[in-house]
Amino acid sequence: MNPIVSCTLLLALGLGTTITFASSHWFLAWMGLEINTLAILPLMAQYHHPRATEATLKYFLTQATAASTLLFATTTNAWLNGQWDIQHMTHPLPITLFTLALALKIGLAPLHIWLPEVLQGLDLGTGLILTTWQKLAPFALLLQIYPANSTLLIILGLTSTLVGGWGGLNQTQLRKVLAYSSIAHLGWMILVLQFSPALTLLTLLMYFIMTFSTFLVFNLNNATNINALATSWTKAPALTALTPLLLLSLGGLPPLSGFMPKWLILQELTKQDLALTATLAALTALLSLYFYLRLSYAIALTMFPNNPTGTPPWRLQSSQIMYPLALSTMATLTLLPLTPTIVALLTS
Image: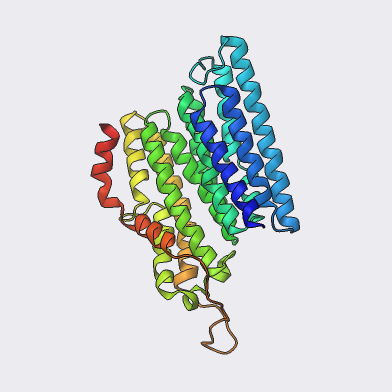
């Protein structure tokens, strides 16, 4: 794609998210979400491949459905309350419709069916934008309305953690694994949204850092399935040693950074007398941890089958800039000791 066109589309992505962040009127927020959707569609379809075209069409139809539901919810709220302001949403009907529309937009279970299929049809760069940046605007709206329908949020959160763990178990395609990983992490964020919005933002930030590192590693190795991971030891031996730690951090294993948000969320749920919910969430995290261990095994403990023993596969020097990967990898692995400071900031 032409660099000027790519830059324009990325600026439009930033503009749409900024409009949603800054809006206090429902129509402006909806307009920001639509700019976001329209800006990413050419990026998704830039590689003229049937899978990419199919993924773009699925994404467009899903986002159009969510946007129409969102507009219907805002119109219903204006009809019931006479207000278009985001803060003036008190009736349970528009709040429920609005929550379900945003759940469809970000891919929460049981409205998640589109996400693995769409992500599978994209390249890793566009997939990174879809699983990170595209979540910001809907989460900003969820945090603004502060939905009081606790039962709905807990059901969505637990279903997402369960589906995200269960769905990724038998996957061999890395992009589908990352899609189910996204669903599971979103479930953890939704579980604690109504009790501690600051903790939700912390979890979202940690998810962004860990997912950014994982996508960059897969992009560096040009890996899209589990078998391709076995060749990474010939391309970047030092990074291959760190990649299992990145994946285990995504799974929330101590003493890595990914353990921090899960630990704090379980603590917050227990404080809110939701011990059963916390227990179920912790058990579903074991499902996710299993397929991260499976990927770690494929990277670190298997060797790609070559006919001449010990012959490394042909490879070219990567042109990827390594500084972002180095910084995000360090953050993914070493932020857990800062937990007391972060807790103090959250409670202050």
